[in-house]
Length: 243
Length: 243
DNA sequence: ACTCTGGGCTGATACACAGCAGCGGGAGAC
DNA sequence: GTCTCCCGCTGCTGTGTATCAGCCCAGAGT
Image (cartoon, rainbow over all chains, first blue to last red; front, side, top):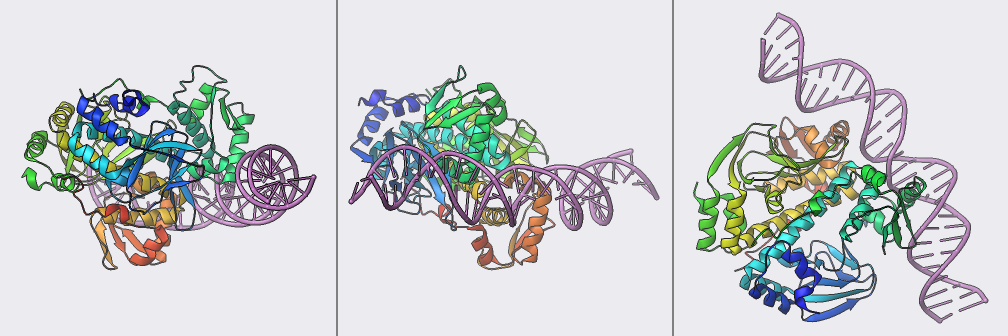
C-alpha cells in the first residue's frame, strides 16, 4: 500500500500538514503485517504494552472489565484507526482490545513510535491531535451514558456509527453493514443484552431504525436524530489546522 | 510566577523533557492574567474559541447541556490544568466551562498556542501527551457511568478526586476540601440531586466517607476502594517518557 | 427584621431497566 | 444427521433510581 494514500495519512493530514520527514517516519511504522481472528484479545489491560496497531481491515473494540466481571466497551475501531496508542504513551495498557471481525493490521513497535515522535515532532503533533478528536468521541459517549434513556442512547449510538462510516445520511432507508452483536451494544451502552433487544424492537416498531442480520437501516433519519439528540458538529472540520 | 516551577511545567516535564525553546514558548503563553467569579461561564459550547486558560487558583468544570436542558459534567479542573485546549484545536468549543469557585487563570490566545506549537513541536507533543492522560480520566469516568451503581460511582469519584489532589491516602480520617455542591455531583455522576443526597447519607452511615460542609473525609479507605473498584494504576508513572 | 434564595435533607410513589428463565433458529463440529 | 453453541427473542418479577412534594437552615439583600 502506498503510504501517501493510506486512510491514516489522510486522517492525519486533516490536522497537520505533513512534511517529507514525517512521511518517511510514518512509512517506517509499517513493518509487520498481522491478522487476527474474531474474538482474539489483541491487548490486555494491565499488560506492558510493546506495540500498537494501525487497522487496515475489520472492526475492533476497546473495553475495560470491572472487578465483578462486567464489561464496558469504551469505543469501536474501524479501518484507518490507530489502536493502543495511549497504552504505548504510558507503557502499560489501561484497557483491553478485542477483534470483533477478522482483522488485518500493521503492528507498530513502541520503540518505533517513540523514536519516530522524537525525530519527527510534527508527526507526533498530528497523531496526538487525532487522539484529541478521539477524546471528543469518548466525551460524547460519556454524555450518552450519563444523561440519556436506553432508547435515546441507542439512537445516538447508531447515528454516530453511521457518521463515522461517512454515511452522511442524505436520505432515509440508507444504512450500513454492522458486525456487532446485541451483546456488544449492551456493553457499549451500559445496558443488559435483554434490554438492548427490547429497545431495538421498539425502535423498529416506531419506524425509526432496523438492525437485523448485520445491517443497520435508518428508516426515519430526522426523527431518529431528534430522539438521539444527535449533532455532528464536532465531526465537521475544514482543516488542516496547522500548516 | 517563575515559569520553570509552575504546576503546568512540572506536569508537562513528566511526559517530555522540555528544552529551552519549549520553555521560552511556554513563557510567551502567559500574558493575560484573569479572574472569574463563581458561576461564570468561561466557555460556551458551540462558540468560536479564541483562547484557552491555564488554571492557577480555584475549581472549574467542563460540561455539556442536552436538548432537554439536562447537564452532564465531563470533568473537573483544578490548579495546574489546561482548560479549553480541545476547543482551540478544533476552533469551536464542543463543551462549556464554568467557574465553580473564584478563579485565577492565565488566558492564552489561540493564535499564541498554534504558533507556539508550530515553532516548538516538542512542546506540542508534551501538551498533547498530557491531553492523552486526561482522556484516560474521561474513560474511567465513562466506565463509572456505564457499569457501576450509584453508590459505587460516588465512592470511585471521591477517591479519584482525592488522588488528583495528590492525597495518597496513607491512612483513614484523611480528607480534602471540596467546593462541589450535591448538584455538581449529580450532574457528574448522571444521578438526580435527591439521589446523591441519599447515597451520601448511606456511605456516611456505613462508615465509609463523610462529605459535609465542603470537606470530604475518608473514614475507611480500603473498604471504600473495594466498593468503588478503584485502582490508581493509570495515574502512576515514572516518566519522562520522551527524552 | 424581614424576605428571598440556594443548598441540604426526607418520605411517598412511579417507572425504567435488570435479572431470571426459557424458547427457537442457524451455523459449525463431528 | 445430530449435537452443540451462539445469538436473538420474550414474559414475569424485582429493584434501583427518578420524580414530586415539601421542610429546614444559613447567608445575603434590603
